[in-house]
Amino acid sequence: MNRAQAWSILSEYTKNPALIRHALTVEAAMRYYARHYGQDEERWGVVGLLHDFDYERWPDPADHTKEGARILREAGCDEEIVLAMLSHVPWNTDQYPRDTPLRQALFAVDELCGFLHAAALVRPQRLEGMTASSIKKKMKQKAFAAAVSREDIVAGAELLGIPLEEHIDNCIRALLPIAKELGLEPQPEAAPE
Image 1 (cartoon, helix red, strand yellow):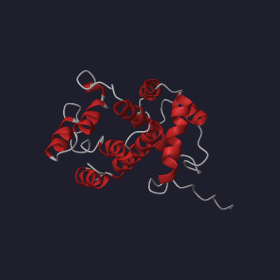
Image 2 (cartoon, one colour; image 1 turned 90 degrees about the vertical axis):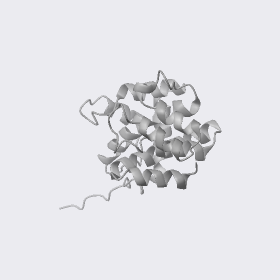
Image 3 (cartoon, helix red, strand yellow; image 1 turned 135 degrees about the vertical axis):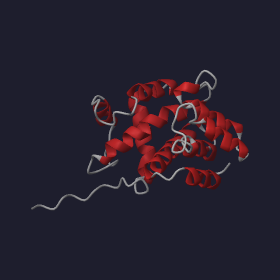
Image 4 (cartoon, one colour; image 1 turned 180 degrees about the horizontal axis):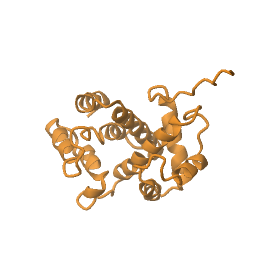
């Protein structure tokens, strides 16, 4: 499956702009890690783009990813992509372990991308100048982006075998080129009153 096909599926099943932005952030981070590990950037990007495409219609844990897997298989999608999507949620890891670099990277970037997007929205410079140390401080604020699992962010870096700071910096670098598409361009300074 190529990006155009993946985008078509995402667009058919996902209408919520926030979920589409999340798919784009995870795609960018997956492409970054594919280059980092010398893997197929298109395939890894497709996994990032499609990882939650079924969530809007099937948010219940009993259905999320399973319905998506069914749809992708019916579309003739490569099984490696389907299995990666199935492995990124905690309720599937017994059956679909995070035992490949592709699956590990997807788990590692998913929650972190959501957190980085939320953190960028409250900064006038958005992603510009964002640092791992500022994100780690923000992670300690439990009320900020409360739905994002800090434990999964930390576990993701551990799964990749890299320091958390490096993982955060990698994902920030991955998102910077698509800042405009994400609505994360730096904001102009407020005019003095």
